[in-house]
Image (cartoon, rainbow, N blue to C red; front, side):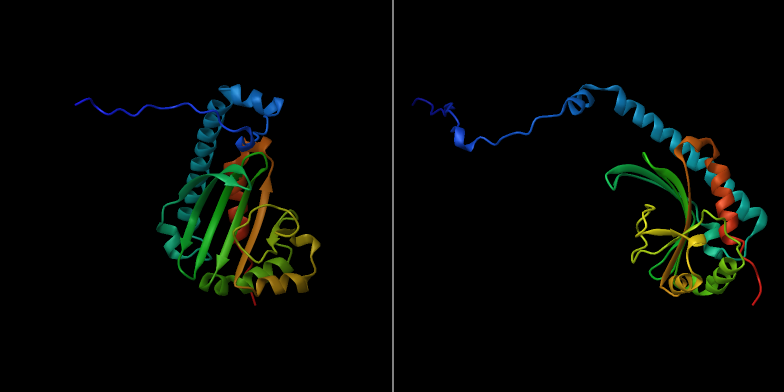
Length: 221
């Protein structure tokens, strides 16, 4: 009995069903041909990861030598975490969380971020019990001018944005104290500073400076 075979029959695809493919721009096509860009990007990300690791060691030194009382004990023993992503607002990023405490209701984290094409930033994120414990000290610090003029406070309704557009961060130095008090009464508070990418060698020093400023809050009533 002769074997039954299926034969592929080439049929012309009706023109009306052909989807129009948008053409690449000249620049897009050049990038598509460019193999060096992605290899260079990988090297840049490796170096940024190293910078964050050095920054973490500097922060660990502060925790061990100065034992700041405003930092929860759980944070002092937890290891830092470096995370990487490809799509914060369409661009790659790396973040170091140290010291860090993420619980269901309580958050205390100092986040050092490298955002491709934009900036380095250092942000203190407080939420839950730790915020309640530090709220008065934060208020005292703001009233006394403790924070640098380039310190921002988050005005967004979500704590998970890191850009510096006016709907997310505003400079403390340019706000009325009544506005700041309202922000401090919310269920989370974020204060932040940023640095230009060209100053990448200063990242460990910048992170240490921001951390000490954010956690060494003035004492008193």
